[in-house]
Image 1: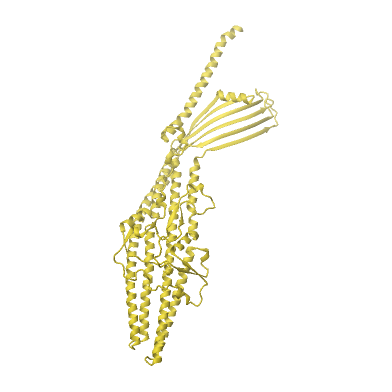
Image 2: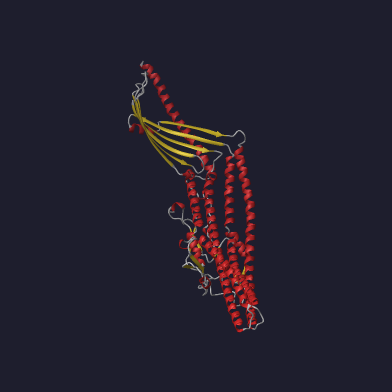
Length: 618
């Protein structure tokens, strides 16, 4: 027996040594199998030498953002783009037909609201930015898009998953080879990290306590531990850093698009307020003209009555004068109605609480039109429009997002092939230190690897159709952007022509008003000499009123044409003086602050004094 042991002992020792060598070789092969796809994935798809680069964020993972200078609502300073022309009109170009203002005309009305507010154009624009409801609603869009961008950037956030479980089992059984009573306690912890090149890597550590009454178990009370590492890598669909960061770039473009749309809303709101302001100026001027025509008719009645009393005129002359007064009263009523509707439109756009739409507050515009003859630089204005029109910038960003979407839909046409691997170190013992020693020595190791796929059998028609649709969408947007660019060019050129035409209309209307005034004076002298009737005088006065009304409309049209020019070039007029301020990120913005991101804030005060005409209603 002793001899037999001596013979078999070397064989048993050799078997143990072989088993140890086999285990070591299996561990090496397992490590090599798991590391090979990881290194291939990192080196080939990430294009870098460090495995940690699959976790870190790089600059090319984010969309190249527009600078603040392109998002800002620029102010169009006319003196920077044009020089004064030498064809300035003599004497009257800076003034309206009457410099008495609408205060005197408004004071003759039978019933006037008790409160009167005088607004400059800058005050109206500043109040609209603070109170306009449509504008306040649009200011939230950049913050919403910014929050979505933060959500996309967080999709690579690592996840820690802890869990604990306790089980007590005491089932009824007739099997004496099986323990009927067991207690199990386990604590599992794992960290899972999404890779920026696709896939997911995770590391977990599990420990537990097991107690059983099974008589065939070597150790009825034991502790175990397990350290597991796993890796899942896409090989075709969803593989690569560019594909996995595309959604972040698209979300970044959407933030800029939201900023541009807000900028467009700001420009549109300011333009609407300025248009309403100049329409109110025109309505007040028209009311002033009609009021002064009523005064002229009353003066003609007094003049005719004096001549009748002196026996120098027929009795019909006062009647003719009274008929003219009645006609002027009808014109005054129409002018008052137009002034009321224009005032109400400005109140609604501004939205100031102290001047609500239904409030009994009279608004008196105090900024003068002050037209200046200009020679506009067409090429520079066209260049300014191409750089600042929000529609063109939005189209450029949409094209960038469409290019990424084409890449994503093309990637979706590939088969889904995923490589998976897992490596595990186990430890067990009758006490916790024993289980830890077994685990750290790496005595018990296991690993597995595999491939899984998803290959459509009919050519992946849905993904192919989505890819074709994304390509066609991008081609369509290219055509739309070119058409939009031509439309912008037309808008600028048309606005330039309207500015020039409106200025020429001012000159013509002023000359007509001067000649009509001279004609009226001549008719009055002829009437005093008995050579004309009251009808002739009133007709001359009506011609003067029409000429003055045309001058008022020409001045208003000139300012409206300048507003159209600012909208066509994607800017706001210098009088608005709007600046934009940037915040670092949406997460740094308090939720109770409505004006955040690239949002407008008005500067107080006029950028330039109104040259001594601040007390005039124009």
